[in-house]
Image (tube, rainbow, N blue to C red; front, side):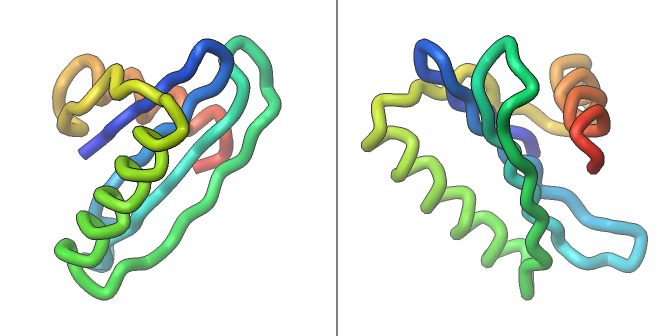
Length: 92
């Protein structure tokens, strides 16, 4: 699952996926739109439910900061593949 939020100048992107060992990975990228300023953080969740709880927390925080959700998709969709490709440029 991939979710992206944006404000006028900034973005936050979350990718929840399983790695080759079956662990649930919660990846969060953030930065300024149109620049290379930002960061990337990966966390291993104890379960899919915990990763979704973290996603809900990020969604709540972004809404409170005035960000709007601009993308919510699966990894297999064209939009999802494009988002994963963009993440790979950050060093995922």
